[in-house]
Length: 434
Image (cartoon, rainbow, N blue to C red; front, side, top):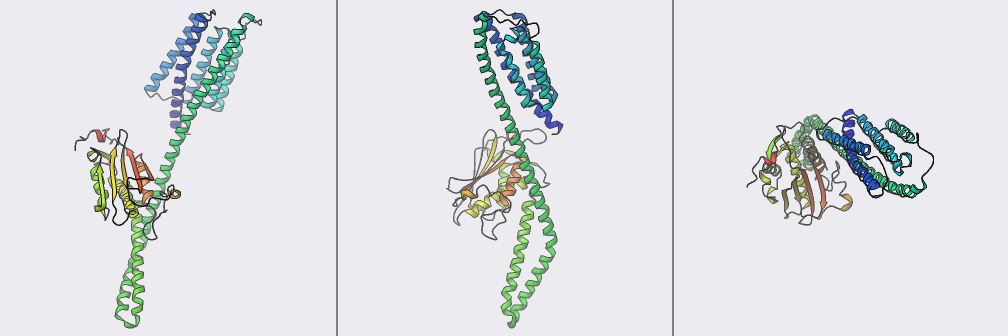
């Protein structure tokens, strides 16, 4: 793992330990007060509360360093856990030594070390904990005070409950954070994979368009001349339709290659600009032949919000979603584009009035070269490239059934605050008044 990722992970571990140490300090103080003031046990309060105060001071220092974004290293995590076991040893020494039922709280630190540290560091803490635990027996009498045995047994049960609660709570919290981090890594890897696939398809399509342009143009020219010759020669008139079919298929090949190059090259190398939402929508609609059947609605203020992005690529992504909606709707049906916002995101919802997408195909519609359209009506790349562009903005594309008109809905969600390089917050610098 790169050192930068290790440092970020170490900071997260320190944050978790700091939360645990605040709770542990409060619990230790409460335990001392209960055992001395309510249960009547006699312990030296000055050293006990001095150790607890030092623990609180260390927790406050950790919290301050986290607030100042201090670059914690993996060895800092080990150091904090070693400090904690030393403090625990001091508390136990002044409160009954090995006869204190809370002595097996060493196991909590060992469990945390196994989760948060590498194997070597976990063994270091285990050996140190075992040594400190053994030190509690030095100079202790072997006789037991039978009058305190009942208190000891009750204390063991309380200690067990506390240890179990701490382990379950914080181990669960640690695992949840690890799962979230893994999900973030998986999402980043998926975005990288999509971007690489899009880039490769773009280079492939561009290269194919360049290499095939001349031979396809030659075939188209010759087939056109052949068609004209066949129409003027009665003996060859039957071949005229074949020549026209050849010319039509060549034209279709050129269109497919141009479409692949256009979609695959979307936003590659495009400059990032501050663009109003309404202008992006207008650009998307200008790419659609049947834009008159698209109804656009803006939630109050969204049309004048500004986004910092590659405008041509994002407009192309939205136009792909609208074109899919038009293709899925009937000839006399309409498609709706709704632009709305909340505190965190800006949403573009494209709803069609078609029959919807079969449930068993919903998970596949964004895969490259997968299409539900008839042969010759689409390449199956539109949704793939739309999702690639949206993902590059830190957003997501969802396809589901259940639009207001009963058809499918494509929901593109991007972060609302896409800050330009100068640090301005795009949408809040713009007056939202219509």
